[in-house]
Length: 391
Image (spheres, rainbow, N blue to C red):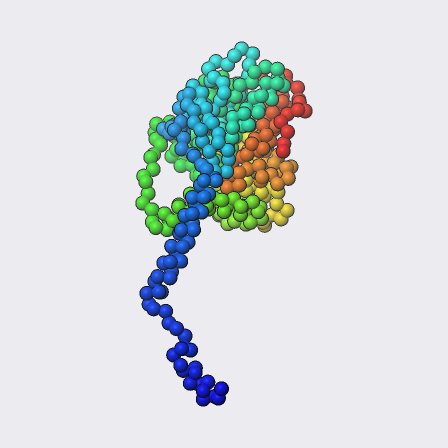
């Protein structure tokens, strides 16, 4: 083909780049968006069928004293990552298999305090740390050891449960605290009025008007598809830690030195523990604080290369100093988890609560603490080599 023929061919309409009609610039993106939405919808239906969940709790009640449960109430619930669990609450609304009435002669009683970790959320009763502790101590001490599980929702709410706890006539009080329990800043007014709950009534939050972006964010957060994606993504500990350390304030707990916000949280907790310890001491009841690590903390404990200025033992160290200063006993589960390879696997990947395998670790360390002679009711119990074993 000559040069002239090539030039004519290049100018021919059949060889020119075809232009899309204007309507296609609107229709094609809409079709793409619709395709994505349909695929997401199908994925959501399938994941909800496989990863079932039911977390509506008709037994739960909230009032000026915080959260508690209805007396003699039973509910069956399930988290997407966990098995179906039946929760039964006794006549005091505690998740305990025994009565909260007068303890039988010759028996010992433990009262546990704390939030969801303390009440064994997502764990069958017989696999929860308090059930394991009760069974093991009953066997070792050769007498009934009853555990009454008194749930709170945060340090202030836990403090306000003390009168209930003292009415149980316990031989020891165990307070399980995790990083999540301290993440929410305590209202200074509520702290000042901690002995007067009626002056700081629980406020019913007004239903917020969500912007389109906030609505989308909440929808994605509650999506089962996103949960399944996170579950597979977060099983890679390196990826999980890289993402977690971008969370700012939450991750600042492990950055040294502590930020003013976290110093303030620990100062408030110190004040509350001081009051709790004094009231329990006056009643002749020992207090033991138990530092329960979070999944991010366990992942940091397992990490071979920590980020700069990060201390995975920071939480346990702070709680230990507070317990020592206030004359309370202390159980360092952070240290215990640090001796377990890949201890982040003892937590549900996305939900973050301790699994049944992790409950065994908690129970074992509580049993060991109560055998060390610091709690008179258990001082006669010989140390046992057959305490619940770690996995």
